[in-house]
Image (cartoon, rainbow, N blue to C red; front, side, top):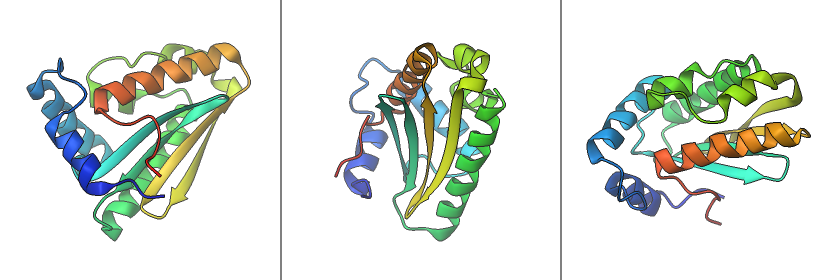
Length: 157
């Protein structure tokens, strides 16, 4: 199901849910995110969902722009390949810091799978593991992302 574009875009643009985050820092992260991901951060929507065996990262375009959707899909395939290789440089570039959980995810890369999956409005990366330490690191990574991007944990159905 597609995220509610107007509501979610408004929440992201207004910075709701993260009252202690400096608006200038959030805006700078959005600019870095657009540079790294290739899509407008204010017209796209992230979801970072914890699941019992790992989680998923969802990125959808809210404007039904076929170019943006293709860019999102390419980005999600790229990060799946990079993460599988233990390369977390893209999240570092977006957040201008090491993202929590990535050191363990890199160290346990053989125990984690990353599957890119196309969606109608974008794509997702499904992250799975049977290793409890890896799963805890995945959840730490997703929680940081959720907080920094002011994103929901679950899709609105």
